[in-house]
Image 1 (cartoon, rainbow, N blue to C red):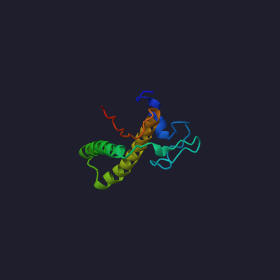
Image 2: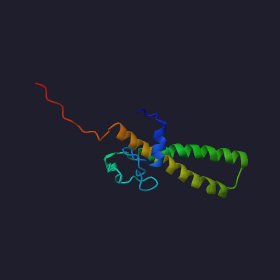
Image 3: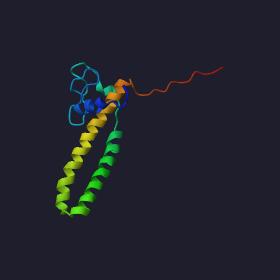
Image 4: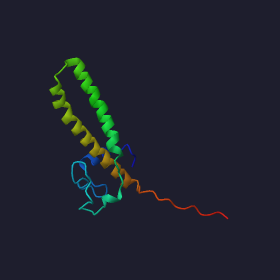
Length: 126
């Protein structure tokens, strides 16, 4: 399947197992389950890592900063309103996008049969 599959984002947001489609991918909001209770697929064999967290935090931070600056320059709200508005929005945006990104990476690893790389020694030439 192509990586631009629109169902990929829906499948990852819902936490659907890439093998059987059961909603078992996540044990918490952004924490993977150890395996799929429905089909037994071991999620620990996939290495998603922490790359999506740093990347998405930067993107969400930039978007929220731009929105906060627009609000400040147009409306001039009090500081407490910025804190009340942006703090939960940042948390929700980072967690929501992180769930989708981590799920999508795991699903793509499964679909493409990606595994950890191994160094294979080259054969010695005579």
